[in-house]
Length: 108
Image 1 (cartoon, one colour):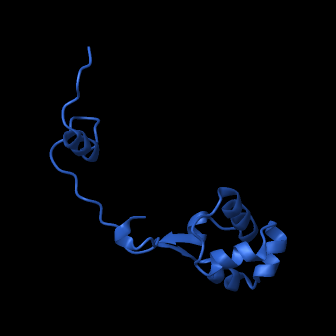
Image 2 (image 1 turned 90 degrees about the vertical axis):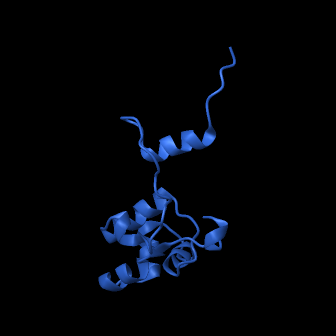
Image 3 (image 1 turned 60 degrees about the horizontal axis):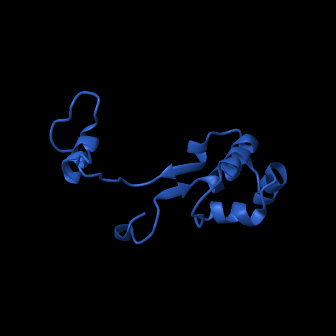
């Protein structure tokens, strides 16, 4: 997150839709997964700022889905385009970063 995005993330939770599709409530998911209703509610309502892999795994196990079914990155993220030609085996972005740093100094 950067100051440009106002501290907001672009991750969207589809937990509500998944539960609805399966005719399941948060309370039922909580009982089956061992995750508190409060934590599931935060995730379902889009207020979560982070999620543990163990939590995501438990949700996916119960709902028989994949992490990409639960979470999605919305919108587009425009990374600065790489500039210049990079040597073979070096990404253009890494080459651009190296150029920005300047020449390496030898301390010998």
